Amino acid sequence: MEQSTPSTRIRIGRGIYFLFAAIFALFIIGQVFSAGMAIFVGAENWLKHTTLVHIFGFNILVLMLIAAFVGKLPRWGYGYVIGLAVLVFSMYFSANFTRVAPWVGALHPVLAMVLFIVSVSVVIDTWKLIMKK
Image 1: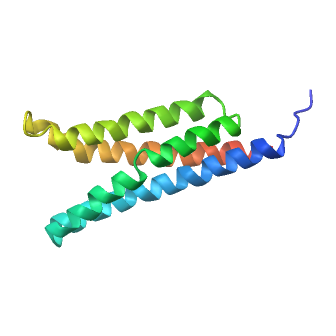
Image 2 (image 1 turned 135 degrees about the horizontal axis):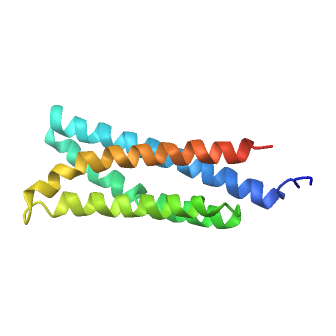
């Protein structure tokens, strides 16, 4: 049985999904860097850290979801977006719940590592899908 090539719309949707996944992974690196700047250079860098998440946090994920629909990605494409959204929400929760339970704040850098690993996995799996012949 011959495998048909995806239509132009599907290829473009998958390419856009890949692009947003790569931007999201770079955003995570930027977040870790800005947190490091705030800790080791100066507290004024916390503003950069929080501004980045408000700009990129859920906006990129919404665009990825739309691109997944346009590109007719397999279920894992949608699952990754939902998983990343849950992790971003968990990051918000761990950063803002520390007054009630301080140990929750300690989860924040751990969640950042998980978020980075998952975001790189999205990039790799999407690349494999795009390059599959």
